[in-house]
Amino acid sequence: MLNLDDIQMEMLAEIADIHDVPAGAYNFRVNSQLAGRNTTANINIVNKEGVSGIDIFIKPNTKNESVHIPVVVSDSGIKETVYNDFFVGDNCDVVIVAGCGINNCGEHDAQHDGIHRFYVGKNSKVKYVEKHYGSGDGNGKRILNPVTEVYMEEGSSMEMEMEQIKGVDSTERKTIAELKSDARLVVKERLMTHGKQYATSDYQVSLNGENATADVVSRSVARDTSNQTFNARITGNAPCSGHTECDSIIMDEGKILAIPSLEANDVDAMLVHEAAIGKIAGDQLIKLMTLGLTEAEAEEQIISGFLR
Image 1 (tube, rainbow, N blue to C red):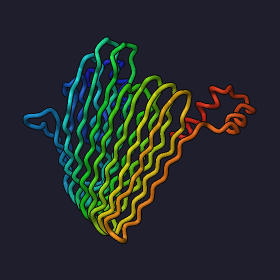
Image 2 (image 1 turned 135 degrees about the horizontal axis):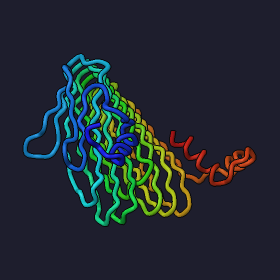
Image 3 (image 1 turned 120 degrees about the horizontal axis):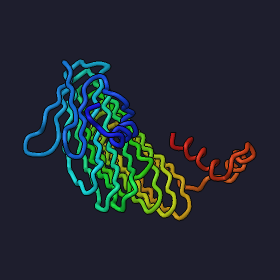
Image 4 (image 1 turned 180 degrees about the horizontal axis):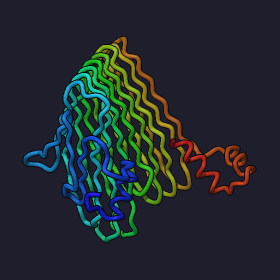
């Protein structure tokens, strides 16, 4: 497919569940070059002028269509910043699958910084899936710094699945969202760090319209000596409702800092935050070990279920 090698195909499978050419619109980027593109009658993809990146235009009333825009980096030493803008018309229902995989077998750091901006039209529904994955046995680091901006019109909804489970040495994720009346945002973050990895997640959500709602939930696991920071701020500027939650498992010598915060600028803003950090409960391990699992196997089963 698209003349990709086995490693690049493996990365596509990990970050976007792609095993063959996907149906619908797509744009594949491999080692800073275009590796394949397809547009449809309702979804157009064009190169930006002056900077690296693409514009994706989705026509009003587009239903049950998808866009895949994965990025693969398999050459050590590549460092790139890419700007992708999504213009979603009114009354759409679409799925957008992004994500980046870095395979670094060399001595130099490899880095991809993706800046994604979403302009979601009135009454449109968007599901956005972004997975990050790293592999390779080189000494160079695998670095990912995504920025996501979401601007939601009246009555729109967006569900974001943000997942990073393995192999990324350093990541600084920043998400900004602004919601108008009756807009709804749901964020589900899944994160695991190990070794000496470092990860920060910074969410800034502004509920600017009446009946706007947001639910930002993170589940994470910090293993070995890895370090995580979760910072989520929800601001209510109108009669609205917002909820943020961080639920984390800490293991070995890992470190986790959770900073959920709320700001209410309207008497009818209803905002809630929750945070919990703890180790795996001993009774959970014992129960699984009585079924024949080793302690390590029991830990893996618990973590897998927690991050599902």
